[in-house]
Length: 260
Length: 258
Image (cartoon, rainbow over all chains, first blue to last red; front, side, top):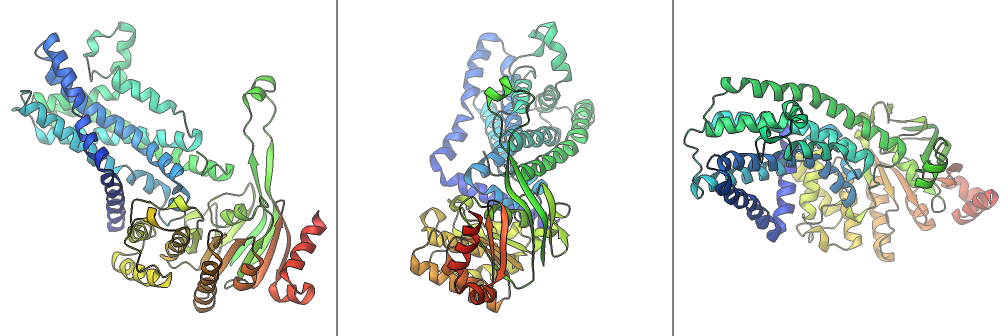
């Protein structure tokens, strides 16, 4: 366990040192996370009073879920392009561990984005978080990140095989932006699309976080959302890790390990 | 001990759009990178793999290092199959990857060694001491805390050797270790590899190279590969006895083939 924690810390330290060495990008990235908040704030003034508080949580979480989805594949692709992929594979840490640990820094950095967005909207844009149940919100976030990481690992398997052109990332990207209720209520969708929202796990993750942060729902009150996301983890995490191992095996046979 | 038994490595050439359109059911073409290679390398050997460009030297070393899986045949490293027991098999192997970009350029040399050492399961206290030894060993003390992007090719090559040695592997695979070095730098590195790693530490060395002087300086056995086939595998003593020089041996074997 301590070896695993040391490896996790080494990954975080590596990525933090690299990212923070690009100083302009590091600060612009944080600033950029606030841009959509302003857009939806003014849009909210046009639409109605309840729109913005609900959407600001959607914006914060959608960004986080997209990061969870992309980080795994991106870490593989970056390593392939930089030339460090073979070296990582030649270490005594198995690739499943490497893929699980590689996006940790990104997750932490995006978590700071969420905190900034929520704090900014609360302090300057008067979103009322006075009823927020932080424990429930953290619980929802934790379960959600596990759920979307499972899809992220599947997506990394696609990157290993296809190199570019990732159908899973595209499909789940649509799930996150279009049919999750992140930016607009799913009620406005045509009936033919509503069923996608019903089976879309992103919707439950965002709904759960909203209920925790705006309505103060406790963990037992969010059991439905948590159960749906946990079921997703139970199925997709082992499947993702298995398929990722198979993908690595395939490219080792094909000789396309370092091809990108 | 490394046992390579009847190993073949076939790379598939991806079909072009035109072929998908006009010959959708035709199988893709293949390239035989290695064909039926069988070789046994005993502990403490220093084997040079010589051959023309594209002969299959790097591919064979990657198969031995477990970075590629053979299409046919098997490779055993210290009794572990590189496909079925991949993690166990490469526990004793250090691979000096000849790729400038295999380091994180925005990290210092020390930070790179710490990162890869952690992934190699070296404990925190042992790692600090090991890095200190290795930095001294590859003569990088002055530069180890600088970012890697500022290193010369030679420094990166020495850092690559230090990285492969962090976990103190029994077998060291070196792919053209002096390719990017100036003549004096190459001589120094060869001395370091031969005297310290092979003679003093008794490590098994597998060296892919094009340079005959490297073969003579580093190795006690020579394997010639051409067009994916192992053409000859002799000790340096036998080569000197039969052919006098490695050049003549190489010319004879490759010439016969052509």
